[in-house]
Image 1 (cartoon, helix red, strand yellow):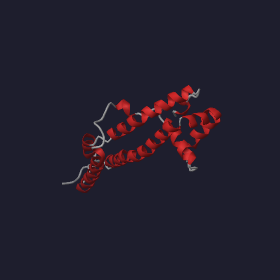
Image 2: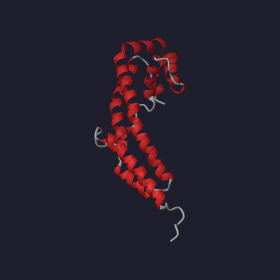
Image 3: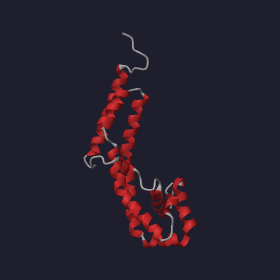
Image 4: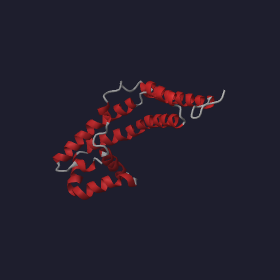
Length: 174
């Protein structure tokens, strides 16, 4: 019997099953610490790239700021000057709390990104049935939902605080 074009052979299917098992193992290694998935709207990071402003503060203090986020810190200094400096000093506890969460969350977000990378491999290999089964069995999006639900309230608080100092946090939403 000859194989039809674009249908995976047994070897490809076995490779896909291995990818699926790897995805499942990664998810199960962390799934118990995350709650059931909430509404998808709560998934979005508050202010899109707003957290990068706070990541830039920490990296600037270590003097190892990356070029990609350096613009956030430089923009805050340039646009708000003394007000920015005052905000940083008077809200050090909040900023430290945000920075600590960001550090941990960046690590946590590696897991769903790795699962997603593997999921994409299934599609690239035309293993659609296995990819669809993975979508049903592995709700890795709930990890991201939980991550952002912890960070978003602090980012909202920082945004409100910046407004009280006369700064427009939306300039950093990206």
